[in-house]
Image 1 (cartoon, helix red, strand yellow):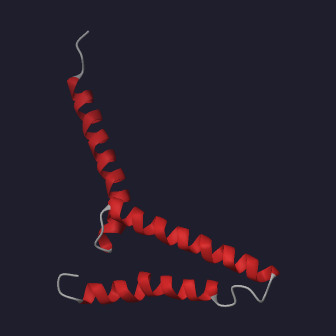
Image 2 (cartoon, rainbow, N blue to C red; image 1 turned 90 degrees about the horizontal axis):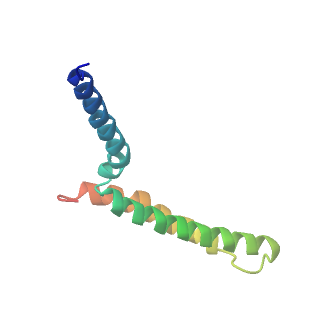
Length: 96
């Protein structure tokens, strides 16, 4: 029985197409903010860490209202500035 090379070709093409789709899934959004996947992951992990600290401050504040009175809200405001306000400003700048 002869091997069916046409099926192998189509299977290989489908594999390449699937790999391109997966690559696009990981790179499309980071590209919209001018970052590689690794850069975007680093920024996102940094935000996640800061959010966890803000959440911890809010939990402590819930039990002891005299502690961390403005910590969580100020951290959220700082993160908003970094994520939204500054990014928009950076895009508006030539080369940004």
